[in-house]
Amino acid sequence: MDDVDRKIIQLLQEDARKSFNKIADSLGIAVGTAYNRVKNLEDKGILKGYTVLLDSAKLGYGLTALILIEAEGRFLPDVEKELARLDEVICIYDITGDYDIAVVARFKNRNTLNNFIKSALKMPHVTRTVTNVVLNVVKEDFRVKV
Image (cartoon, rainbow, N blue to C red):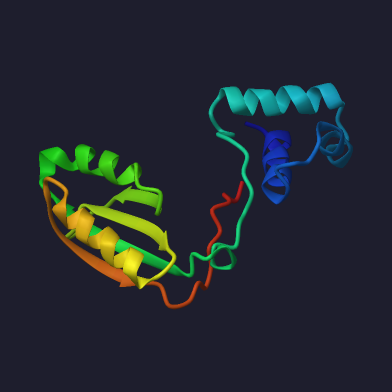
């Protein structure tokens, strides 16, 4: 990956709808080159998809929680797969420390959070959870500086 690829990634992180023409104009390269570079980044798995950034609170999901989960060691992948199926979950991380899994999830209200926690505790091989409710979002940016 060279500087042109990095600049293409930066442009697409600013606006994933940016056309190949606009990418080419911004970088002073041919449209075909822009297209081929983007396609190559996709083929390598560097660009995994294109999406929009949403304001979850304005869509009714005003409650974000960080849920730490302890699971029986050898069943960790099974628990993570089960959690990944749930619509509220936006991130799942394997972590070190007292807990095995960190889950970030969004909810419409306390009741939906409560139901989520109770069903997580009923999952086979989940031994305990700790739930932290987000009070304020200081920074939430999944873009990668390249």
